[in-house]
Length: 131
Image 1 (tube, rainbow, N blue to C red):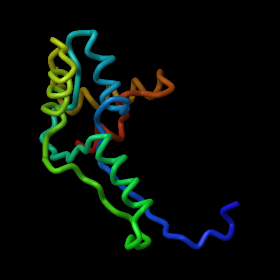
Image 2 (image 1 turned 30 degrees about the vertical axis):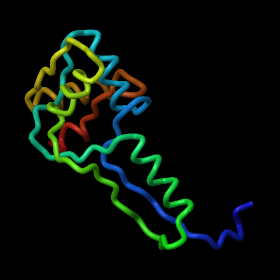
Image 3 (image 1 turned 90 degrees about the vertical axis):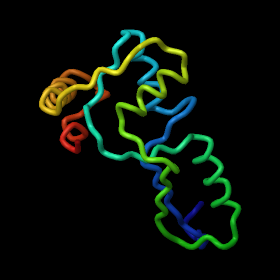
Image 4 (image 1 turned 180 degrees about the horizontal axis):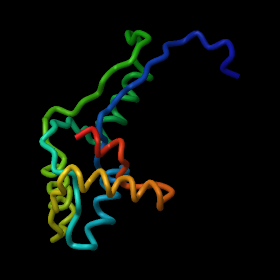
């Protein structure tokens, strides 16, 4: 059906999507029941973007007449490290859980163990190595 498509082709690249229904927010909420949420102790700057902002941008891009073919980064407005981001999500959902900052080597080992034992690990060795 799309074989003769001649429209615009764009890709939006949000670095980290948060909000109701997002994978990261849902994962943090599931981990919160344990009262401690382990995260890689990283100071790397992330630019999370809210799921509603991503949806609005998708609609604007689909309906826009001036958009050119291409790949468009879609960062959020503010830089934040992942431990602080995680704590803010916990605060927003009213959870008493707290962030447990894990050293990089421990995070890498946990990522490898999760990859070996889980179909969909919440931490991978690749993501642990990035920090």
